[in-house]
Image (cartoon, rainbow, N blue to C red; front, top):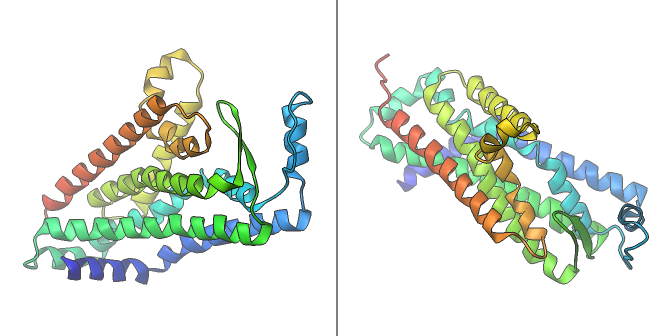
Length: 278
């Protein structure tokens, strides 16, 4: 099993498209950091104006924690396509080239080959979130220093710098879980198709359609909106609330886990039952 995982990791990181997403993330974070560094924008003044005269915030200025939080907000809608670039090509890319057939006729059971591919995908996803953690948080702290932040959610939360490292770590972990839904969706579609582009495109179409449905204000769509994975992918924001709604957070986690299990199970069945004679 270890050799299969090693081979799949080698194949994953030998593809140029694997690095396109990582480079895009680093460039986006870098551009945001440079923009704030050059402008020296006083976020504290902006927050004061938005909060009104009734609330006083002292010693709140641009810092690495604030920059990282803004980076995570900005990347929230762009990360799915970066994740889908690799996951959507995992199986379908080898189907189109014919190499998957050679692998399936070898003595190694199909379920082991499937798990090796899935683990390689999850490892790539882990690299993605660690890049965000390093460049988004640690590098931002190095450039702008440590400091308190104000977060808008169900309530206005002023978070002290001493607790933010733990909160960001939790947020990154929850982001990993959310992105696993996208990764498994693209991976599942990849198990059905031989065109490596189709799973990536379909994954993004589903994500966009779900986002649009989730933004509709018609009462008819409310029950549907509650079970869309896009509604719960922002579960990481609970890490920055002083009094998070644990019931809603656990509900989101359960729904995301059900999607992950569902996509994984369908992909597993499709892969292990695939007819390689055609």
